[in-house]
Image: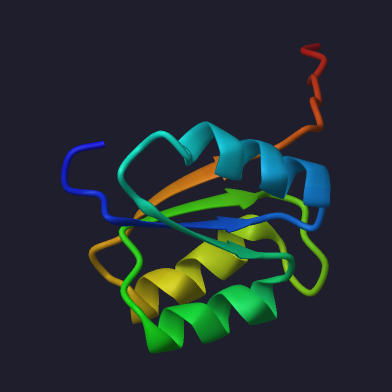
Length: 92
């Protein structure tokens, strides 16, 4: 994770927040967590974030819309959107 100093994790599931935070623990990065998009936006207004890891399905707004708003505040940030839901499409 070269060049990444601060990671923001956004998920409404406390177990996922804890798991991702634990996985990043051995890395030399500052890990911030937010359970809702509004909390994530407040964090991004106050400090620099290098990487956003966010769930696609969040209360208040979905992950990609939140990411767009965060990128306006943090134009240099990278984004990783995750989901625990799997959908398949049938082809005709």
